[in-house]
Image (cartoon, rainbow, N blue to C red; front, side, top):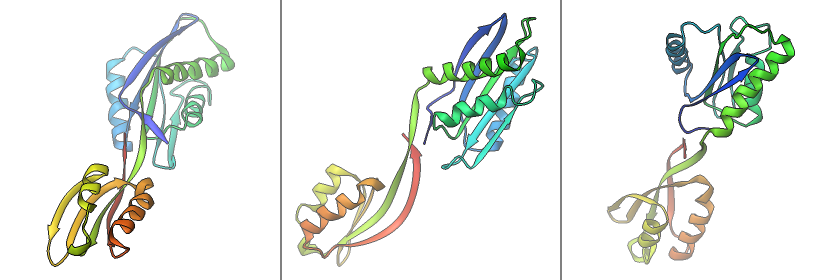
Length: 203
């Protein structure tokens, strides 16, 4: 899954109606509501403020609103674009200024789809990456080049010297097996591991 790196907007004009789409990274419904309030304040004379948002690693939270447009002609096509693009932790808001020409249900679906799709094309994306934080515990006589390897290859957070050497590192979880194999080779298999935390962040 991915999200947008920062807020981006674009305007599409269809039959004299202006559709201004905003894509914004969000992490909670509270943030969504705050942004919606800001955009309504920024566009007080707009006819509609339609929106769709998806939140969660597996897109667990999904909601959309037609905001006065005919049912399922605005919010639903907007959220379908987000899902098709495999986006999450994202809010799409399309502000419409009516130009006097009715578009019909099919025309509205196409207009709101186009509004979001064209904004997505212009966006810069971030990808959700899983990280592991852990301790690697090694006897003194087996250190060898371990510290240099960890420092050069990963984020070595701390080194503690007790009756053993305890390295605290952070690395992408996808590199975990590779790292352990290399450490095993360096230490003849005597290294011990203690997992501290697993988390995700966008890059």
